[in-house]
Length: 192
Image (cartoon, rainbow, N blue to C red; front, side, top):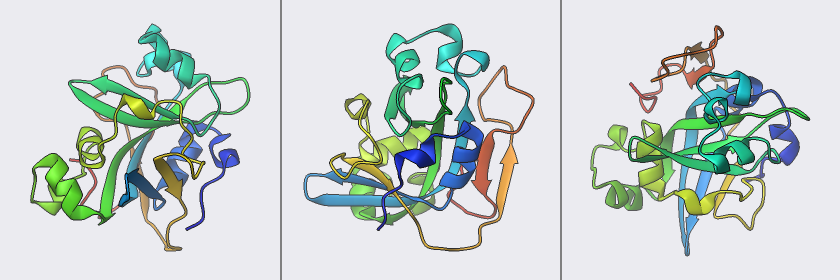
C-alpha cells in the first residue's frame, strides 16, 4: 500500500479531514498488523477554535504538537480515553484532525481481545474505542504517520466513490459555525 505523504497534511485541517475518509489506518504491534478504513473524522483549528486543546493552552504538549510538523501523531486523553489525532495545517498555522472511527479490516480478533468486545460494529465506532482496539496511547506522540518506521501509519485506500457527509463536531460545547465532522454516509462503523 502507498503511504500518505507529509504534503497531504500540509493543508487546511477540514480538507485533510475530508480527504482522510477511505484511507487505511495501520497499527503495527510487534509482528501483528491491525488495520481499518477511516470512516469518520473531525477537523480542529488550534488557538482560534474554542473546541481545540490549543484554545485553552493545555495540556502544553498538545499545544506544542498542534504547531509542529504536519503528519505527526498527537494523542491526548479525554474522559479516560486516548484520542488519536494527526497534525494538519498550512504553513505558520496550527491544527489537527481527530480520527473518530474506522471500519476494521485486518487483525479483527486482536482488536476484539484488546477491547473485550465481540460485536464488530461496536469495536471501533468512536475515538476512544478505536484507540483501545488498536492499543494507541501517548507513546505514539510525535511519530509521523507518513514514515514506515512508525508503528502507526496511514496509507491510500481502495479507489472507490464515497458519499461524504458533514455535520457539527460531536461532544463540543462551543463550536465554530462550519461543519467540521466528516463521515462516510451509510457506513455502520460511524459513531452514533
